[in-house]
Image 1 (spheres, rainbow, N blue to C red):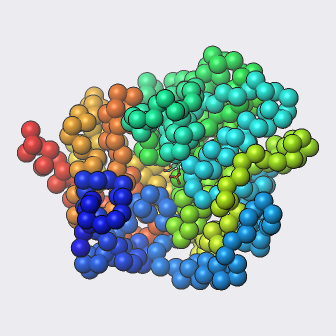
Image 2: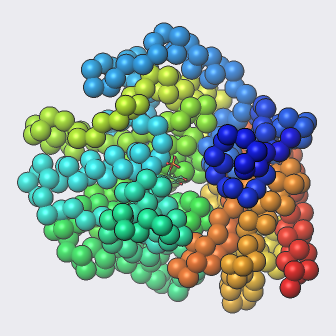
Image 3: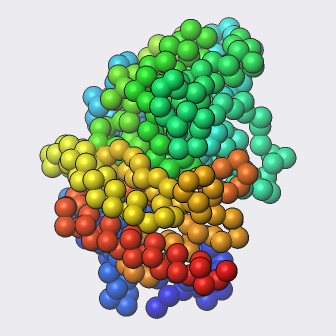
Length: 450
Ligand code: PLP
């Protein structure tokens, strides 16, 4: 049975669509109460990495919940949070050794930016308060995270409540002047970030927040190999903290624990979320070095950001169990290997005129749809290409993550794939096949509507 507002007491996210009721999942598949099966091609919202139905993770949660319901992180520590912090510190690059767990990506972004600000204030540099972020980008929906995000349609009703954030163009090579080919344009080389810092006044800029590999908003755009080393150097030279938003890309999604890893770059703060507890519990984390936190420890003695459910033992236990499962089953290596298979097979989609680009790394892929491939002209927003495509895919039994309106003028259509890391070659072929059928169906519908 599908559900639609106002047929139940749930305030659904979308008030004009129907919701199938999912009753169980196993591996890469979801099953609804009508016996329909869906291939979870996007791991929901890029969350499900170890797959559905892993009983040892469910048992780890139950076990921890049975030991203690809740203790406040202001008064107590607990086994699970200590173990999670040690696991994440072991996986993190350089001096990123301290972990502050929260329950959502937006909360982690807010906490990371507040940590950056408090660090400068307690370092005797109170003028360093400005934030710099890229366009397009997405960092969450709470008000500071939304301020940092460059997704104008999400701000429609809330503009008056948001704070100003300086912008530099993201390295989105399908849509930039150089198309990712040397000599790189300012957006793709990192020069645009330096220009923005200088424009704002380096003595006023606290932090740059950016996604190491583009998420939904630039459709898995992968910056050139020179990009992050250059941005790291620019941030260090201007004393701007580099905050890597690895909420979507972390926990193995791009074939390495963090997406920055292949660039050999260590950020000043990293935020994780989504996959770190595999979807079994809502969990996120701010990962920071002692050199930042020591300043607070010597000064006020408190990180001025407390939330009831930070350091929650049951959520942390889910994170520990997920990280151990990823390790024991070699799933991050598998994300890299299956990612190569996925990207090879996705090349077939270029046969469709409306597929402008296919890109990504590991088990993260973005497919950009265009009305005219030669000029890269997007579909008019009224066509609702990405949304119609996702609905058609769902009808065919494939879950994808659609995204539209990422470009400055509100146009743009993307479909994202991010399947669980347990996916095999045959399931990838099934996924790409269903994707192609959904493209055909959408193209036919769009043509018929004109
Ligand atoms: N940062 C990035 C890169 C994201 O993709 C998201 C969510 O999609 C967030 C932050 C916000 O995370 P959450 O939705 O868990 O608040």
